[in-house]
Structures are given as structure tokens and as C-alpha cells.
Amino acid sequence: MSLAERLDSIRAGAATRVPAEQRALMSRATEELRNSGILDGVIKPGDRLPAFSLANAQGATVRSEALMAQGPLVLTVFRGSW
Image (cartoon, rainbow, N blue to C red; front, side, top):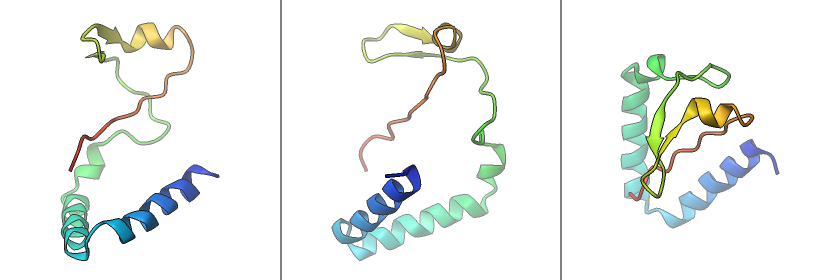
């Protein structure tokens, strides 16, 4: 299954699990963010990320340069709970 297909599946599943009122609220908030111009300043797929350091799950600092020295780097972001 491709990423696009997986994301479509997640969206379809959300339509059955999330109440209509909450979906409408999230949709409005998303549209407001898009209309705000915030996407003009985000890093796009294929852009080179600036160097960064973050704390890992154990609290140790991890630097992107050190990770990239080991090979390609995939960055994921956990948004947290709603």
C-alpha cells in the first residue's frame, strides 16, 4: 500500500470514528491555518533541513549531523493526543 493510499485509509477511518461536529471544527481550523500563509514558511519535501539537536525519549541530546553521518535520516513527528 502506498503512502497516499494509507493516508486516504486513515482519513476514511477518521470519518467513522470522529463525530461530525469535531470533524467540522478540525476542518475549519485546518482551513484557517492554510489561509494564514503558514505553509509558506514550512520545509517542503525534498528541502534540506537545517542542522538540529533534540532530546530523545531517554533525555539524551541527538544531533542531526551525527545521524546523517550514519546514512539517510527519516524524521517523524508525534503530534500528541487531541
